[in-house]
Length: 127
Image (cartoon, rainbow, N blue to C red; front, side):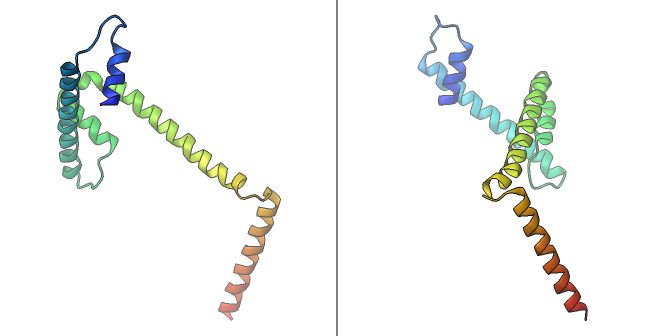
């Protein structure tokens, strides 16, 4: 409800108010649309014998339901999401080094020591 109210406030001019029953109707319409879209995407997903609804299933569902006009905007949002996800993943990976509390040289030395130990264990097992 808060999200819909925020969207209404952003979309409407400042001098126009939205009645509570109108806001409630918009929320009901949003919920119904999401159910319709999710159901169609689920059907498409099941036809492909997949277990997880992917973005491509939602896009195909939008086409099947006749909402092609929204596709360019959906594609932009999807690309933005993928870009943000890559940045988050990269930050997580780079954060590991900083969060370890050790220098890169110390970590490299530790890695080389562990590799040498593993090689020695392998040689011992081969004999």
